[in-house]
Image (cartoon, rainbow, N blue to C red):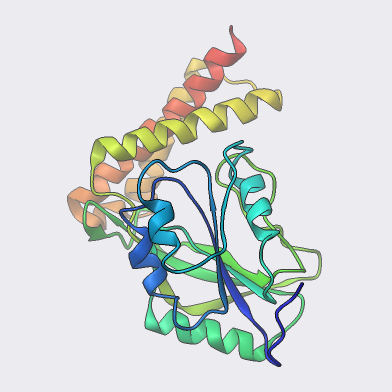
Length: 258
């Protein structure tokens, strides 16, 4: 089945779990101008489904978690539109970005994927340095021409050979976290998934390497990526990044030495 209205159609796709806090604000920024909204839930226990069904009937559930990349692949199978725009529940489309997306659909080019600049918050402040911005990510493409890779965490869209990546104007606002310990739980889970994946791939590390990677992460975030220009928030982010990197490599080290 495919949608046909004489012009390219656009579907918004999300994978979610327990996103009742953010979901409505996200979908409010797309509900009036996209052709379909597809949501794949991985087992929410809050009001996520109730909120989602106010915006779409295309609500699906897969609780057999295969990793972020494969979960996105599964969600894309439900997309009937010519183009798919990927969002996370804590993201918002700005008016400027909306116009750019509509311009891209009007151009309707093949063998093109579109990269969007994400502007993220930390503890209520937009972060414009520290490696957080600019943050170009491919989120818009023709649904029959590519898809996400199989990576467990920090997945990305496969760029086919000969495909052009076009950056479009307008920020994608990303409301990452307000609670430090809530964010630490998420980072810990990401570190665990990374360590598991790298262990299965046969990657090795050491305590010294873990410390070295963590120290360099702080230096890169705070000095090289000019996190200091974001003030105290930049320092906190540099510390968080270093801790995350340390957790990844220590987790891998412990797995290889069981």
